[in-house]
Length: 415
Image: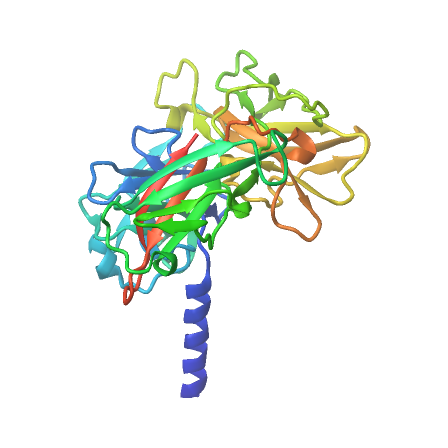
């Protein structure tokens, strides 16, 4: 029996260690989970170790009932699996806390309660850099999170310079983008840069097409170059669609109609279309992000903005038999699941989906995923152009010989 329990415990630990964390919601009563720097609405959730910035975490629970939510913080490796550090090695102060900043919504058709907290705070600080996940739980059930949000802490030691171009090894000024960058160590001690450094690249904070296990094209002196690397060729895609339903009195950008259907509001978006043009059309977006906003609000947007059913519609005479179409964007944490999978409506010859969202301004794309694959393509529906303005984030991690965790020693964001 003891051997059986030991084997079970070992299996549980290995399973937990191998889990790759990402921002997501587990309880359907939780909505609009957000994490980002205080005062920097569209920034990535990255802050400096021992800096002056703070990370804001917030979410809504869809009722006015009393709930007791708390949180704990875990340290992760470069691949977002659990690191080998004990909590007292990466945290100072307490390892968990109760959320006390709680406010109920005001005059909304959907009742909700807004919860928010900041990290670090008077009860909890950070000792090391790297990746972190904050898990939110109810009634001290720490092993049953209702939501979790990922963020990173950097101790900047290396300098990263980067450019994006349309000319690649596979085509000239067409559908693709080549990311080139160099990492200058600037005297930072690294014995074996190829073995000790891990580099991760994301486009628009997506995980489905992120690039890992990168090897430098060449290494000279104290500089690593990632130039003409085929792994760094990305689909250019197209600018994100956007819509604004911050007012119930007038249809905002991208909105056909806002109508009250007791007991809630419906937001009918303007029909989109499958892109057939080969010509790029410039447009401004925020690369998939969103902002909560209520026009002419008499109270804080966070408790005054209402939830509404937003209806997406993509006319398509011929169904996509070779794959699935999803709505892509930060509003669903760039996840591709049933909540944003479009359904084919044969009667209207359209792909449709309805999502409950909080008032504000949103970006989204149509992502096509071929059968048997996990990486999405923007080109199939929205087209792909080398001129598209995408956000690229480069993360450089370092694990020196004998170390037990991945330090985050450099971050570069290129718009």
